[in-house]
Image 1 (tube, rainbow, N blue to C red):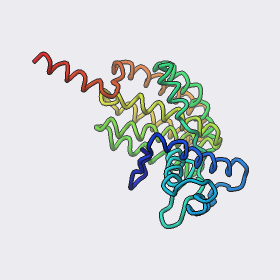
Image 2: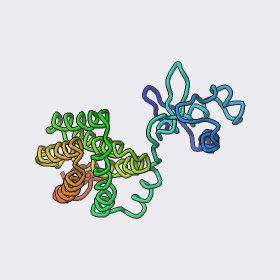
Image 3: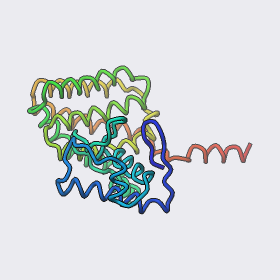
Image 4: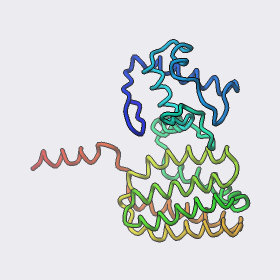
Amino acid sequence: MITSSNRQIEVRPGDRVATDLVTRFVRGKIIRGEIGRGERLPPERELVREIGVSRTTVRAGLQLLAAKGVLVIRHGAGTFVADGPPVLDSEPLRFLAALHGFSRAEMFEARRTLEVGVAGMAAERATGDDLAAIADEVTDMFASLHDPQTFLIHDIRFHRKVAAASGNPILGSLVEMVSAVFYEKRKRTANRARDLRPAGEIHRQIYQAIRDHDRARAQALMFEHLLVAEREQESEGPEVHPGDEEDRREETRQYE
């Protein structure tokens, strides 16, 4: 099922090949330079004629690309190629994580390798708008200290804003991709977190180092933060996978 902000379009298995035609057609136009960032796609009726699929299939394909960050659908105005930083599709990495069972230690090792350097670059390159965006996430983290799931969302956004402030769209995209996979794993244990205030505080310190253009301190704090976060999450115990809690409740009912 393809989901948008205000409705859902059902895509049956038999329709997926046709939907793939739409996504490959649009991606091809972008790759060939026929349509660039921020530009409007042809109207749906024209895409129907060019691709040779139904209007419903065209919409499903466009919704899928919008969900992946490739397109932006503006109701009443049309569909446009995204004009923001590039977004890599995290699905291949999600698949590898499911197939190979990435460990928590491996995820944090990858994050430290990637994000420590990114924090240093952000300290050198962050603009006023970048700093405002990072500061907003810190504020929202402190406002959600008693709501671990909301805190986690702002935590992930903080790291993405720091990556965007690095000024390197490739690194920014990599952090986006890795953080999407990390979020899926982290949200299963986030409610077991005890005290979120220290985590909020070190994020504030990272922000301050970036604001002060102190590369060495920003990197050191990011490294420390990710080491501490790994230890904290280890103390939360194993991941809870979808259905595990219901399975445990069912086992309990059988013995009642």
